[in-house]
Length: 371
Image (cartoon, rainbow, N blue to C red):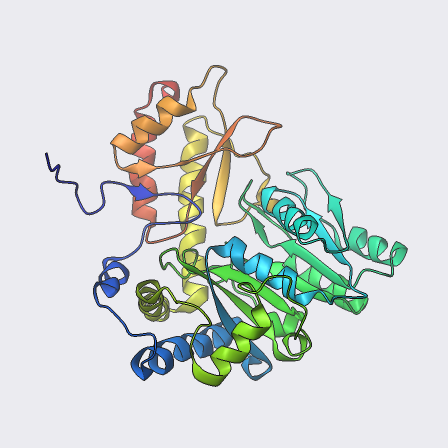
């Protein structure tokens, strides 16, 4: 028997996929031909130009390359293409699951690499990076995550990028959960490759990743790729020449992303979206503290993207808490670290401070929050 399900029975308070606007969802209701200029020039190439302009005031020095698949596909495409076949060595800074995922990719691709592991609640310091680079001059590329959604920590992008560039290294940044939601200028920072995804702070839907690459750096990557499908260089050359993707593109998702870019601009750009995310975070964390839920991280390390909360008491049952909130319109995220029992609440997507206040009222009614 058919069961009617409301369009959106709950708000996704996760780091992506996330709640999207009706306009973004409606943009997927038309079919597109991948050979037609209406798609390749008017949509794909326009998206590429807009992304480069969002990333830096030096947009002429950068290009945007769209890649099929999730954000991890984009990260692996960069790692597998940016490292030369000979003479390259990657340093990965890891203080969470996504930094560790980069190290795992490097190992799987058989890339010469070294990982610098840190506790999940500690941000890497520029001095530590410089010391590591001084000890191992064979390192040519440095990779790290900007916002580690394992905890919600915001790693020091400017300091780390500057430290790597002082040593003349190629800088690769996983900005999956920060690009479009936290102001940055990749050109001013000297970042060579930055990766993000359609379903994060731009507020599109899942289906492709994108890479903001320095043209000079990418132009040296021909023949490097360890994967035919994930050859970032060849994807770039094809897109520059024809606007086409080398293989079937996720047309509906791409059109939804175009709409999401329009909505980002209408909101006031990245600065305005960042302000909203910060207010979402502020409203929620202050209210949760009143209800007895403390954050895992100190304010100095916390991003406005997602927040980890410690369990409020021994015996707290997150599965029951999750179902309680879901039944009342909010989907939360389980914790992802081993050193402390936590759960996470995302602040990104088509969500507003009023939604955070509504969630607080739901949490207030949960038994362990009483008193």
